[in-house]
Amino acid sequence: MGIDQLFGGIYNGKRVLITGHTGFKGSWLAFWLERMGAEVIGYALPPESVPNHYELIRPRLKSVFADIRESEILEKTFIETSPEIVFHLAAQPFVRRSYREPLATFDTNIMGTARLLEACRKTVSVRAVVVVTSDKCYENKEWPWGYRETDPMGGLDPYSASKGCVELLSGSWRNSFFPLQKYGITHRTLLATVRAGNVVGGGDWGEDRLVCDIIRAIYKKEKVEIRSPQAIRPWQHVLEPLGGYLLLGRMLLEERTEYAEAWNFGPSEESLWTVEQVVKAIKREWDAFSYIITPNTQCHEASLLRLDCSKARMRLNWSPVWDADTAFHKTARWYKTQYETGHLFTEQDWEEYIGDARVAGASWMF
Image (tube, rainbow, N blue to C red; front, top):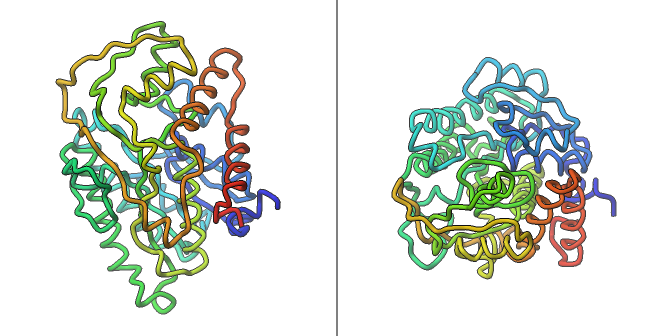
């Protein structure tokens, strides 16, 4: 079976608009969609970091560099490109920055999403919208079981609160402008939201992210400062949730109205690791750094966060392909190879993931 036939071949020839395509997840998503024959349009700010994954892989797509809050440019992009499906990843994605820049965080994440959804509403070609939020959108009580899609939204820090608001905003937009009971009568657009765990993989140089901090320390030959070493997080390779987003997008494009709702795409129970476990796993693969543990006195960080993904497993037949061990092996190999030789493992990681998904019988292979 050819790569263009993944997800039933639904993306081959489709016009797909990705907001935030210059970011870590967005660039990997653009890479995957291009390989499947999609006509990809990207809308985002220029990459923040040097280096960055987007410029390293040099995707062959139409890029519009602008702020998600610039309605005129955004709506003009929709008019000129007539996308059929939209993946919305543009955001201010950093928790600690949200403490420094709370107004910009709320404005970008909430009003930016509102402007994006309004552009979708005005564009008749748009059939499906997948809004990417975060596992931090939930009201985190730090209980030992995973959060389900029906649990309350919340957020102690500005970033988390903004993502909870985006979920509420998207639900309001769906009920007000894309109601399921009027699908095919007054509109033909299906809207869903997705939440993932902590994603890792090659090409991320974002601020205040554990793996990124380790890589920067290696580059600078400095010690890594580790905060909250016993904090537990759901870790997954970036390709895992992207496969879930693409599978959900397929269902929406196939006019499956029952899938236009919220979804969790997180790792298995075995991939719930402490921060210190992650550091040791990276060190086993690339012993080029040392670390010290420092107390976190600057801002609140949850000590436990996990997702319940049984809904995606039962209704979408989606499940993770790689465990945390594999995810961190691939991640460390990507950075180590890029650092030592300049070679990128993006395509190889993706091909290996597709191969392992085929062996595992992943539902989206067909």
